[in-house]
Length: 383
Image 1 (tube, rainbow, N blue to C red):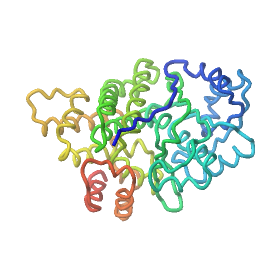
Image 2 (image 1 turned 180 degrees about the vertical axis):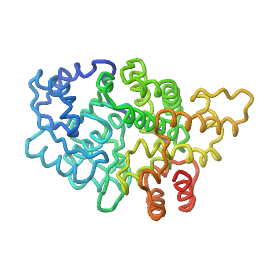
Image 3 (image 1 turned 90 degrees about the vertical axis):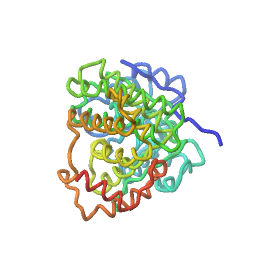
Image 4 (image 1 turned 30 degrees about the vertical axis):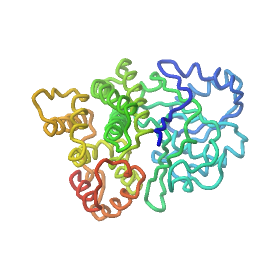
């Protein structure tokens, strides 16, 4: 059986990349956009960077700015209603993972019908490509601007679930580091630790390949070298640019090698408590890594070296633990080393979340199988 590698057909990258978008859209005959974003980005006038380009090339647009930090099924339904009412022929997301995931859901259902939940009970379930989707990224973390994943929240069921579908790949992705300089310190830290989690989980995935390995290891190196600087000084263009490439490389890795228990557990924390996804990943990553290192010791030793640890004279077990300690140290430095209890998580919900985590598609490629009780114990260790 062959391995398949997915990524957008085109990505515009680097400082000022958005200034090349309007001409590209015009050349493809796109005429009427649905912009999917959140109210903060509209009020801060950051979306003007996009709308100015659309107007310059005669492309009309309507704006859906109701995206929640953990985008919901209702967000998708509301956005889809506006798209149909305005007769939009393509979708443009502007923001971070929340905007991109919501836009993916809108574009997929617009082309295939049904409900977004219909596409979550397996992988690659849609029959047709989604409505053309352009993703303009303003954070360096989720990589949702270029992956086959979308994470959706079912508020009634208190769960988050992934939609994994080749037909939600964006038509064009835009990563312009100049759009990222205004990110607050905490958002920079949380999204950066999210990208690190993507790279680590992809590297130890059961379906990793040499291509995803190369992407993951380079992403880890760039994050270890640049995240702290990007957090401390958002105007550090060199660090911002490096983090932009790091999160994209991590996205290349996990979009094709998938993820593991960190993400399947973090999804439950988001579904039940509406907590920031990147922060949940940062909290869970060290302890899940310790659990997995018993199965993938040499791989975690590689991760240690990518984190900048001198492993000379260390065996793989010692090197693996040193790498996990380096991850914890980075998390402390950037302010994401928190405890779940501080964020309102209650022990009575742990079993519910553990059961749902093991049913999450991301768990399928975790390198070591866990029982429900073992997942509960990992949660307890970070309480």
